[in-house]
Amino acid sequence: MAKNDFINLVSDRHSAITDGVFAIAMTILVLEIAVPTIADISSGVALNEYFINYLAPSILIYFISFYLVYNFWENTIILFNFKKISYGILLLNMFSMAAVCLIPFATGFLFKFYKYTNVNLFFSSLILIISLLYIIIFILLIRHNFKDYFDNKEQIKTAVKDSYSEGIELPNLKLYLKGVTLTLFYILLAPLISSVISIVLAFISPIASVLSFLLILILVSVIRMRRSRKDDYDGVDLTDDEMEFLDNIKKSIYGE
Image (tube, one colour):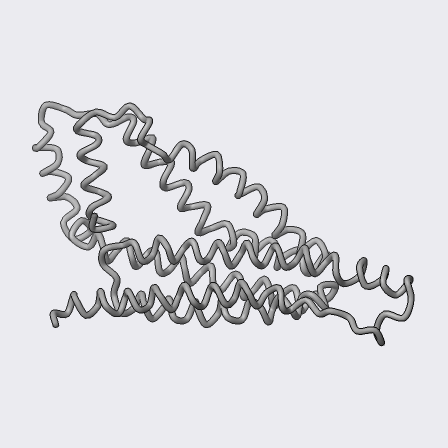
């Protein structure tokens, strides 16, 4: 078996186990919400206190954690669509999965002690670490898949310029690529920005620290939904040269 074939096989297995880890992590999140026993709830007043002090905050935290895990899972979809993936990238993905497995524990911890600064710091720091791991992964992916470009950047620029000596302008293509880049930027940096703000707010108000994830993630979701419509280039007026250039870029990344 050739080296590239073996790496592709390992990458496929990593993709499968990665999906499994995220599916289990998403499922376990809801199981961390504790159901009270009859001994715990002895009156209507106690039940109301349970709803207000535990259940309502826990459900809110659950949806925040679920969205974060889902966001990280989206990163892996992009990761395994790249044509070239090295062992180092797969190793970093393994570390990120190990950290993702801690999210249900950190979420359950937050369910019970969301009013405490240290607990908020633990949860936010975990999200920050995972976010940084994925940013490193994607930097390495770009370097690995476009190594020839980085090593021969000036020669390639000259060759492209010479091949389009008559002059070619790609204004529509530039807009499309800008949209794709912005969408990827939001996906990668949303949890990182949220976690940094949450860490800062944890020292001021632990409750605000939790809510900061909700407000920022809602905003980013709206932006991403608006961008996704702009990223669909099927309805964009592209020239034949622009379409060919775009297809070559997609093939270099995804191997289509």
